[in-house]
Length: 435
Image 1: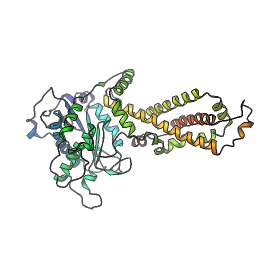
Image 2: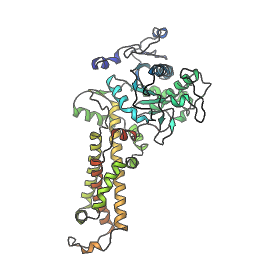
Image 3: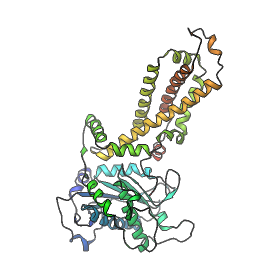
Image 4: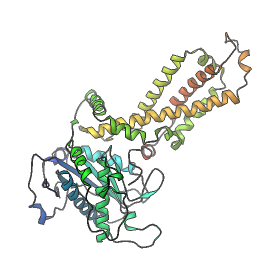
């Protein structure tokens, strides 16, 4: 499909009935159920949600069964969502994409491809279905995870087919797997719409039930909330010009500060440097030399507190911008003329995560510097340096020198850390840590 066809895909296909139900679109080699296709009527007044389904399968495996499973799961799931939201849901299935290996993956590793499809087609939501194990940030294996910010859901069939601690392997086309998968999908899409486990019904914590043969409904109190959220989908997008895109990102943040702040608070961004040892090593190593350098002490002691603070703030922001663009952590990575509002929010959140991570790196390096100054550096050595008018060095002076050296360390870490794209993406906490 060329770009012009892809951009028009939203205007083709068959819509769902606003009273409940959905049908797949035929744009991308999707097999539409002929028994149902004629039953749906188009209501132009109803919101329409386009869901893209991406299949990422293990190398060498036949993608056919997994593709059929993904399509059936999506159809079963959006039927319940259509009934709960009074919206017309359409499912679009892209061509299966083989993975490089069978290793476990975190959901953020699928975000790049999902974002590319989301702005190219475009889709309002993306569901990624894979047969490799899916892990959380704590390396726990789970059935699926959702990102309310990116509007991406990742489902793994591994835990659906295998019960932990047992050798029994279920069939992919069994009734139990079918309805548990549909329930999981509705549950995760509920998280995308900011419903939580306390909302009951299908939003109760997911567990595999062998006797399940239908999707549990949403509780009545959450249905009104879902209808309110759905009315904002689809959303605004921007097409051309760097300045327009920058302004669009700023406006998107002003419109949706809550979800950005919530994602940032749950990201553990200050601890990100501990997960990226190359970055931390590149930051700490030169400072261990500078802290014993007379020139660094001369500059640090003669700076004002305001200058030191402004230098640190500017360097932290510059380091975050450098990592964002040089490591290509903004979405979508491929050149695209369209950036949707929630992709803009993802980019804004990634930037703020990097800023907070650089602040964490600054505190880490600064703590090491202050420890060396207080416990290792000879206290009487400064009194013999001719560059000092006042040989007395107080705690404020030590903090200022440590802050100045730490700022240089942050810049060094960002410039020489050499973060690999995939490694950085693995630690961007854009997904919930529980199904």
